[in-house]
Length: 171
Image (cartoon, rainbow, N blue to C red; front, side, top):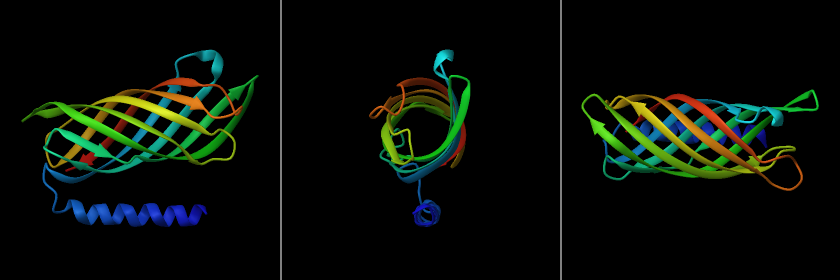
């Protein structure tokens, strides 16, 4: 199952890599980012390190949509006991470049998704992120976001996390 998922993600990545060679500000786009998050409340003990690949489409140079595919390593601390879990999440995102000028862009995006493959902690997530980057074809991005994890079943508590995102986008 994991090997099939790795092959699927690699195939998807290579497909979008080839497609973006011909993309302009309007058309196919993708982004790759690393997100490091921590819980806003210390008593619930949660931290995550995520790697996200988001293929998508830019409509007019300002509005864009995507499908975030995220590999997440999550740390849970409960009663002094630390446990780790790897998680695969998939979602839907939409965003808007609030400012777009010669020196850079400022974008705001929102996403919704959930756990696809996990052993114990199944959850949905709701995400809001602001990112800044250059306005070149290859856009290094730095962002700050907030993510709410809604636990499914009795697998844990709901969590509100703040995260920092570092990555790049092509379009």
